[in-house]
Image 1 (tube, each protein chain N blue to C red):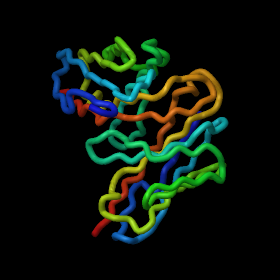
Image 2: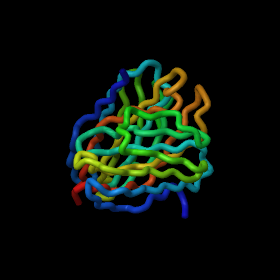
Image 3: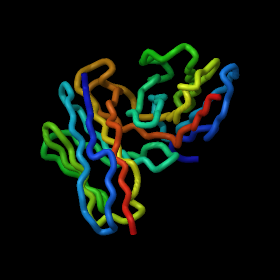
Image 4: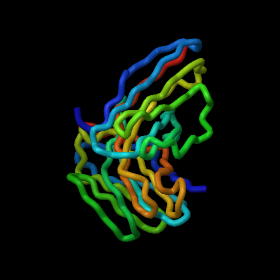
Length: 114
Length: 116
């Protein structure tokens, strides 16, 4: 069974204090790993897709990296507007339900204080 | 309208009521999804439609009944719900479900459902 574990559950940073969020996964053949941002009372907003170990993607202050067992979301010099819950999800390889099924973690609640 | 829209945004219903949630996507996608998001739990996939055909019914109780009349619209009909069904219900859409590909799912803002 595919599993996704995110840590920490909650992270509080001062503005400008860089840090990383972790997403550990077990999946039968990774087809893709996704990062989403979710603000309170809203739906998840797509950030990145990573496909293979060693891949990196960046968007503004966020950089996502991928290894064979985990992914990191690095946040450089965060601002209060980066406060949100960050969700990680994996899609397994194969056929059938693998074509659409994402396994999500519980998320990391990030709070950035001014 | 752009992206994925959902109505209503908030819904309070009694256990004997019947109500429907509506989702519309403006992204030209042909797959649509219903998810349930409860506090402290990961998103739970409920239903998946591809080209208006249901391809997944993830052991969801029959008091939840989906309907997909076309590739842009998705409904979730609710009846005789239980208090534990209170949650955020999210709709998502993606490109088609061809084998071997990876498709990002784009989410709507959700409907916050409270069952009293």
